[in-house]
Length: 379
Image (cartoon, rainbow, N blue to C red; front, side):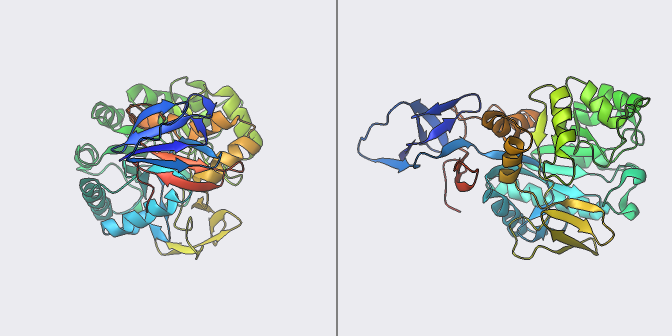
């Protein structure tokens, strides 16, 4: 059945319109019109003057709904994570595996493979964050799991049946040839959890790395004589950066400065979310270690940040209220820009004819009222 979404402000990914109706059929956008016809067999959905925008896309999600991706053993667990984030406007995401044993990596790939085969709504691929990182900048990652590149890592990452594959590595410890081979195979290589110098980051970018994982966090800082990872990321016009805009991982002033320097379109909002997002019980266990979640901050007993309790709707709100971005730019940072980074901007990240009907409906305070994935708003 053809459906018209009416009485809403529509942000297409490029422009914000008042009084536009969106026409969808068979899970895709088939028209954007000033007024909808009332022909028989047509469903009309009145959105009450609220904002209709492209669904959010999160490239770094460790868990949600009380479930950690590292502990997912079946598709059901994966669905819990995706549904938890959908409540906050995220209609597509990349489950992220924190550094772990090789058998856990293989098992996680199997869960993703099955989820894609079954068509789990919102599942795009997988992000292996580590274990090929630097212990000096490990953050909450367990040093026992950090190691040189495993035999078989290339084959696992480049298998071709895992959707969009991302990995985060430390360029000072991972051979450039490995980065180059992964990049040539279509893997999106990001740099993070690294003590690299500016020159080492530049070498990683030259080898094919295209992004930096959670800018400022778990990496060498920008200083006067050594720009470090932060300086290299801000200095490179083509490199993407993800930012955790929760006020805990990065001071909002620092983030405003970075966004003023970085090319528009290259900064993505990410949550780095943990199981606490969408869960009634906020505290959880990470690889045997208790994690406390209070006031939006997840941390170990010793005070080390352990991912976040951030959801994407709050990240968008913070981008507007704390970073002083326009509503349109904040929405792009949560949808169009990550879609472009992932190479799926030909079908996601916009409300345009031919695009998948993935939407979020929000009120004026950025509270999520509804979501659609491929034209379906029942979950």
